[in-house]
Each structure stands twice: as C-alpha cells, then as structure tokens.
Image (cartoon, rainbow, N blue to C red):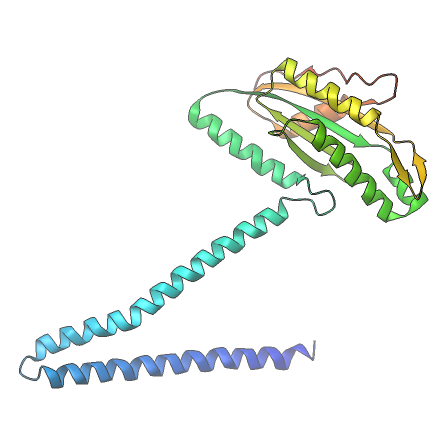
Length: 253
C-alpha cells in the first residue's frame, strides 16, 4: 500500500495540472479571440462580440464534443467486451448461467412484443464423478473432463441451441423453437454421444458417470423452473440405455 500512494498522488497532480492548464489556456484563447474581433470590427462592437462568441464556441466546443463522442463509443465497446467475457465460461467456452439468463430475457422481450408463444426444451447434463476425477488425477484433469463433455454436447446439438455451464459439474442445453419430435431427436443424439464417449486421464480410461434429464415447455420460459424440473428428471447413462431420457412436459405458462 505504501508503494501505491506516491504513484496515485503523482497521477492526481498530473490530472489537476492538466485541468488547470486547460482552463487557463481556454481563458487566454477566449480573450485573444475577443480582442482580435474587436480590433477587426472596432466600428461594430456588437458584431465583434457575436463573432468572438461564435469563434470561441467553435474552437473550444468542437474538440470537446468530438472527444466526448469518442469516449462514449469507447465506453460502449468496453461494456460490450465486459458483457461478452462475463457471459462466457473461461474453462469450457460455453455460455455461463448469467449469459443464459440474458439470452432468455431477450427471448421473453421479443415474445411479449410479438404476442407469439415459445416452445422448446431444456436438457440438463450432470457429471457425477467430477470430484473423483479431480481427486484421482488432479484439478487440471477435471477441467479437461469439463471441456471434453462440453465439446461432446456442443457437437451433438443443433447450431441454434444454447449450451450453458450452469454449475460446477452441470450443463443446460436450451432448444428454442424445437417441437417434441425435434427435442426427442436431439436428446437421443446427445445421450448416445455421451454414453459412447471415451475419456482418458493420464493414459487411463475413465468411466464417466453422467446423468441426463429434460423437460419440454410451451408459452413463456421460466428458466429456474425448467432447470429444476430437468435436473430432477435426470437418469444415469449406461451403454445399454443410450436412447435418451423421457422428456416431461411443463404446463403452459
């Protein structure tokens, strides 16, 4: 802390010095322009005053307006970058839970404007032995497992579906616009891909303990309710039962 204080004090003084210098410079320039206008138009002092005011406004206001516009655009760009970073999970590259909420909020706003109802499904995937993986091989391998499962999910669903990491060892897949047949097909394809996947840690095959559940919805999207229902309907995947879980239907909302 003691090392930071001189730097902060020096930086504050630099800002104050620049501000004072700018104010003095603007005042001198304004006086100079006013004087030159009065000299050039000595026989018409009212016109000289108007010309001086216009020149001062133009020469001083234009840079400030341009600078403000540039800073506003930069702030908007930085805000977009921050929102993008905060909506992406650093380990898997999937959308975060917050990002999924923002996406659903946007869908709900469009639904209310158009008056149309939404339909689709939410599929929940959970890795049941992630902690065991970290204990046996180390935390870096648990990250590898998360990335592996996330990649398997992303390549098994449709391009327009949203894959979100919603917990330390869980993912939600939002299928917007999918009817019951489409959702069942995606669920079956995803389940088959996960059940047949092969993962090795330090050269040793790892038996993945995965659970998958899903829920259909129609009307509005109650994300918390969908997540809770899908998580409660999960079934453990096995090689013999890789046809996908039964998708329950949530009452219309």
